[in-house]
Length: 195
Image (cartoon, rainbow, N blue to C red; front, side, top):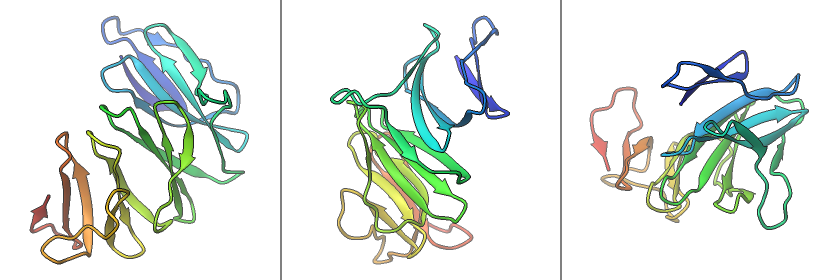
């Protein structure tokens, strides 16, 4: 299956048949983002429903959509954003099953939330609310993010800033499947890449 967003609605297609699969959306609901769960036919969808971000799981094979709820207390996972215009991006670790969700406001401020395997949603304490690029290492629950306020790259597992050759003013480039974190000097042109 493959998908894309058009006019804030997700369009899902079966790649074998080329046929579009209809997803049920209530009028006025905005699709903010989606992320396929690796190696499955399932995606997680973030929707803006009356000023709240709500999360849904969609199984393309079974054509079934349901709200993501915390397994322990059965409550729906929501993030209140009011009437703010927000952007949502998501990153998932294949091996840990943990997803990080970044909610960005038009003011430039961001918040990051963690959705664990029990589908419990919690806000992540970050050093700043000016968050740039972010990702998660594949083999452990380690969020890496750019601190745009201070020009640093930070980790939820490392107490100090990530440094390369003694330099802490860095740009975050990404992570790979072996838990390597790639960074460069904080310049317009990249001359060296560190991991």
